[in-house]
Image 1 (cartoon, one colour):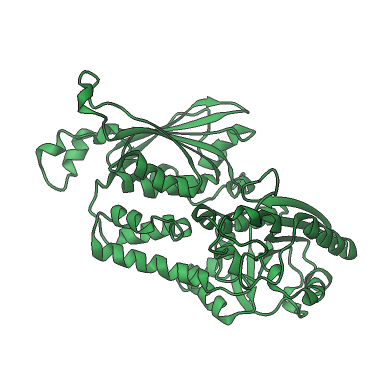
Image 2: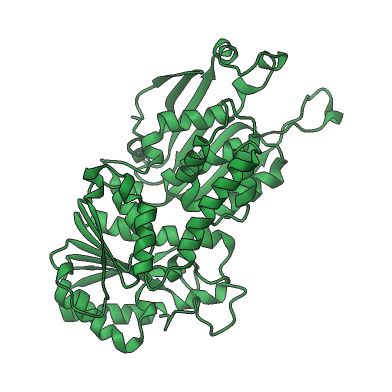
Length: 465
């Protein structure tokens, strides 16, 4: 079975850093069921492809079979992308799937053009199900079908598809999507499904699965149809979703952008904002950072995964949101050294706070639009005059993009708690004025799909002192 991952990000050979596999080497990994080969069919500055070839050992398959039957001797397992492929991805690309890259941390946190190709993917449900699972995550899906037997066309097509998935995403996201959805499509796992599978599913899929329109289908099929396990997993996912939806000033728009927003955007936009802010702080070399208006901790979790950030402080005006963040970060389960890197404090962004002074960087993700306009001056003094971090990444909705939400009435704001929403020109004028008054240079970038007429859904200003 073969999986290839291609990028045209330049230099494309940086894919080797992200995967922790050198493009010039052919590496072999011994697995319990066979061998995984990693090699690069092409490796240039403009285009690079990494291949994972999984060669299963039929004798090992029989030795580890749960029960002996003819099916253990005659099956498609050595030739198709099944749960064996998911296990191999976790074994050989585990560091990449966690989003860690010591040599290119900013690239690991960035969305880059990626194409994944699976040569033979068993799909119980056919192409329609395949599209239902991957398209809401932002993938362009191309499918090639194959006849059961070319000599007998009346037999129809096999359930095995050659699949190409194309998107601009983080590599860690692509690997997590494949890890969860490959066995979901096949439903024929090679190992016994127990309660620890719930932890794997929530760990690998929690950030995107909660907002997927076919969440229940994925959970049920991934857990082999065991209702008690699926019920427990859905309960954990729903609890996380409710925490997101109940956030106040901190993440109200980032995690629950009006019902007008399409399902695909609800899954992706909150993540993209956090990734953009984290990438800006990382590129600035920040080590001690603030997440102001941290809400339930989406950005905090992302920062905690990166060892560059030695001290991380999350502040929010809502004590309830801070309690949710504490639970979602699982601070009581982290190692003492890792837990010591994070602290949560209660406070407001419109009052001077000595605890905010002396930090390298600060993120303010989808917060300012929740402030009444007369309070923006106090916010400006608190952050830019008194706290004065060297780098500030501030995101806010782009009001011009609202016309792209088909169910959002004209003139209505995206969220009931928004006090205003800026156009790109309005945001740039405000940010440039703030930067000029306090000695910051500012650059701007869009977050999310860029529309040639109205720009991206969100906008970010990166202030550097």
